[in-house]
Length: 218
Image (cartoon, rainbow, N blue to C red; front, side, top):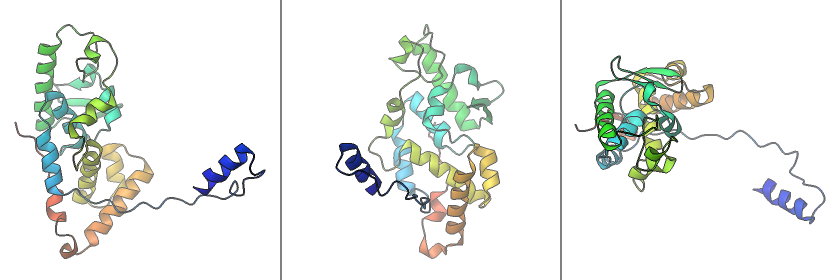
């Protein structure tokens, strides 16, 4: 804040030298990540009913090895989805598809073929606007279904990754291998999991239920 204020004052000529220019900003200390409340998760999952939204939710947050960011989901091409071999390529990484992801993927593809049989758009997820062109769906189109919910798509994605490390132990290498995360991110997840797992259950009674796998009703 001070750096910004002094920088603006120097630019306007109020001062001649910014006294904060050589002050190093310390490394930000992140807090412990906590599992989402089960009721928040269930409410968000119940709110997603359209085929495209169900697939986006499955790729971001379901009990599988995707945990894809919204940008990666928007970039997906039809060729990235291999139904026959039950594989999905997300940002160059090959992911096996579990039964749930396979089910919602087929559901979406059937809907896509019926709704826009002649579209030239090769992106996996399209809508009434992008079906007329070749570009990806907007970020808003992915986040709108859960707008105002206690558990957003991004929060559900983070919860999915936290669930993985809580289930397999605070192993940063395992998390990096499964999700392709950078070292800094995996360490944060591992530290959070370690703190949660070492905490007495009495102090966090919801922990035992919050990491149960998500399910979409079929």
